[in-house]
Length: 175
View 1: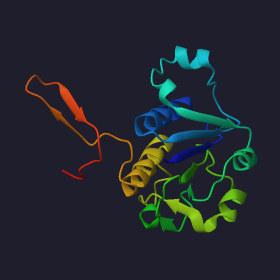
View 2: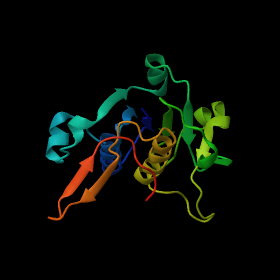
View 3: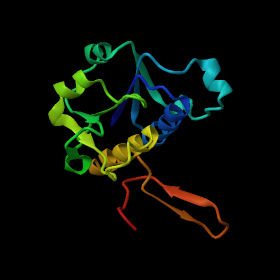
């Protein structure tokens, strides 16, 4: 299980994309307030998020609240300010991946307290950052790959009628 933490997310479309990634990958989604949008049942229904019931979601009042309610042993902070890229990280079962709000990233004090656990996604020097939902997908799938894609379907193929057939089990690896 991978834990995805969004600290003060601001853009509802990003959160929706991330929630869909979490639903599809069985990652847990943790949202740290304040949120820049409404996730009430009515708002989710109005947005047509049919996958929302598949999301294992917890909302916290603050980072302190998150840490007081969970044992967070293996944490990684995604930031453009990190010196090491994510390929050097070893993501263990139950790891926690932290992502900051779209306009400011993770709080500086939090980053400094966990400087050795800060990782970045390599990109060209003159690019400010990737979209938050893309960053979450990249790191979530890397963590899941390192863990052997637990609980995810192993393969799929198109049958003679053009329908998709899936088989459960461990992924056979790259094709």
